[in-house]
Image (tube, rainbow, N blue to C red):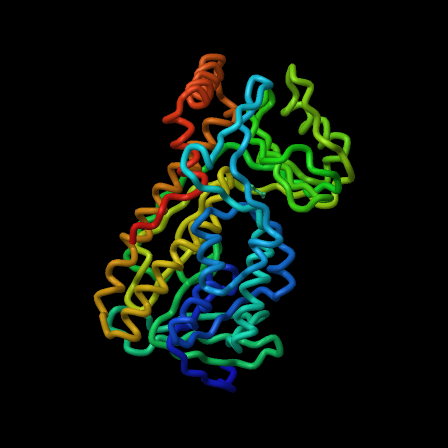
Length: 399
Ligand code: PHB
């Protein structure tokens, strides 16, 4: 084994330097707690990986109030509603009217860039592009957990800490250290074909549409670049899809008697996004705590993934502060239940929006009409629209 060339002592070692890990490191810094952030990926890899683009009200508040980002308010766009489109007609859900809240269109890559800038400004210890990270001695009886890894030059390092946080995403190495653990899964028989297109915006707000050929989502990025998705078979290969074929699918899914059409332009990025629901419990084992995708995944309908990770981290920063700074060791015991209460709400919301708007391969004419009946009930009901608006803009955190 290569000898250890450096050993760093910190209070919290954070495995994963995406938005969840960086937000936690930032909140801990504000509370006077030191951390080291480690990630296998490079800064550029994370900053160029396209993810969802909608922030709940409380995610925006967290970014702004903690001093992590002002740009979300200046460069982000407030959206006061969405369009639900089915049977070729649009139905606006007015969030301000029903719950007095908005969400913000501000892509995850921008959240990452802002958080990275905030940690760099505050001299945070961020180590990207590492390999072979291993987490040791996190069990309940451990007094000194450690993370070892190789730096980009192949030299071996060690970080010792009071606590380790696994914010290392859907391919987490940390989650396997939780013993015993229970995992809940749901697979879906479809995926999303995601594109970035160079075209002007087609509508002021996001459009979630259930077309005869399946689901499509019309989202946005900037005045000149739009993000769109359509339901596809998980085995589709993006290389088989020409721009014409992509536009035909998208236009077909939004088409209706109102003559609505999308503004077209060149497709500059295309990929197939998997769909699954996953939860692992507990989210804590001894001195190890999990946050975000390491512990749970939601399907992308409703854009809950990043928001849920930020909600975990909000709770986690608080329980870590109580443990590390105030000696309240029992605070850690509350983490799993507090985080999972919101996780299961978001699991239900994402599942509900997904199944209400997508076509299942085995669906019968009965299923299709029942689905249209559900959508018609929703948009005709103040209670139904309030329910959707509450979930979409995010349930208030009542601690
Ligand atoms: C996105 O803009 O990428 C996006 C927006 C809303 C969703 C999912 C993705 O529900």
